[in-house]
Image (tube, rainbow over all chains, first blue to last red; front, side, top):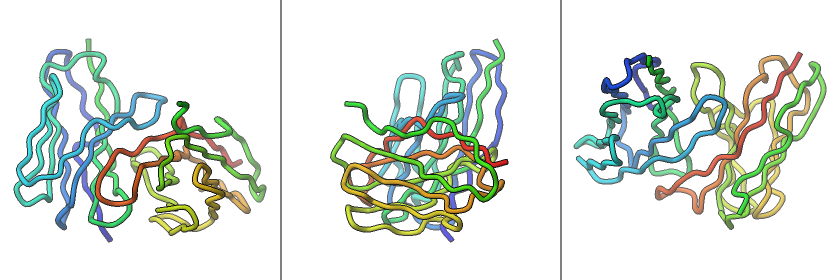
Amino acid sequence: GQQVMQIPQYQHVQEGEDFTTYCNSSTTLSNIQWYKQRPGGHPVFLIQLVKSGEVKKQKRLTFQFGEAKKNSSLHITATQTTDVGTYFCAGEFGNEKLTFGTGTRLTIIP
Amino acid sequence: NAGVTQTPKFQVLKTGQSMTLQCAQDMNHNSMYWYRQDPGMGLRLIYYSASEGTTDKGEVPNGYNVSRLNKREFSLRLESAAPSQTSVYFCASRRTAGGGGTQYFGPGTRLTVL
């Protein structure tokens, strides 16, 4: 079946350090989305990437979509305590549904 | 706008009991989805409805049934609950199926089956 692999599963960083999570698919994606889920909360949409090689920035967050549209990354510069949560990628394969990665849980050491 | 609402927020069932999880959206979205979330497993799609009047199986449909009651409402039914169905259940909606677009999630239902 169509799967989206995400690594790492957990990441603990000192406040101020950078953080990166990666997603990979074995087949080409039509688009990829990123969501953030705070502890005890529900997933909230962050961004969607559609074009090959696309790079988008939201303040300290940088999102990339690979040239082959099979991988993506989220990079956070200089993490803050407000960045705590689980980050999910979700790939669309041209059908009617999203396939979510397993998520990366980010914890910040103050 | 309330967005996506789910009831109940918490539920404890005994093995073999049945229940229905309710979901409603007020954004006039065509597509609605039910996911379950288990530790380390991410979000797994149970069923979805691309448009009013249609439903399709997702990745983990066994033990569940759904009803797209109208454009606003999409319910998930457990006919005979099992401990393996202990999970957090999220309903989501988006404007159209396919072609990208934000999925909006409800607050979730935390279900425990004893």
